Length: 277
Image (cartoon, rainbow, N blue to C red):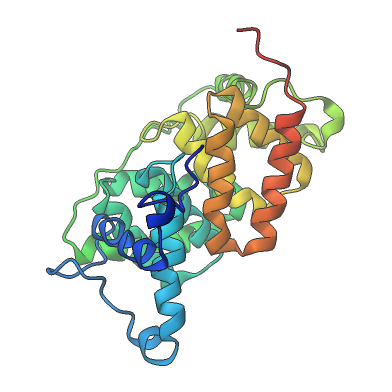
């Protein structure tokens, strides 16, 4: 039987208390426990909504973060991406701190935020970067910025690179799919989204797709989400990883948005051509 993430102790031994206790190692990795390994309580929630505080520990960190299919690092980058997109600035600081605690460098945190810039908009992105910078300063962390943009580059080369990267990720898109609204706009996205962002070092291609798929259910059309789910499969992500990513988002976006994304993904999976292997 495939492990669902609800069988931490296996079979009949699983209990709600088991699930809650299984959150402790996750929260320790995320830097959210004290020296004794016990989760640090949220002052407000533990005071006025203790059942919700318990549920967050159990249902979010005990169940979701413990599920197979994604690594803790992948879950962290997905969470940073979606929390930034939701403008939950009060929560973002803690998730950036957790990203550092699971091993991301400051420059990788910057890349996670930068990847979603053109999807969620510059104001949201720059606000998230400001919060990240404050975390770096509090921890006395030096940032070694990744600087690869060359203003001397021939714009035609930038365009070619962007077109090649979009084709690598999404394949050849039909003109009728709504991506190319007009030539100038399409060129703008090819040069800057695909040629300047998706080609950056610092994160691998699947990591960039995880960040992107984490925000698209909030901001994209069904067609765009389908294109990117197909793209995730093109670059080697497994169906289980994509399903698991949208499962992970449930606690952050809410049930309806996550359910819709999972339905779209399963429609894409159902239309896949059978493997020749």
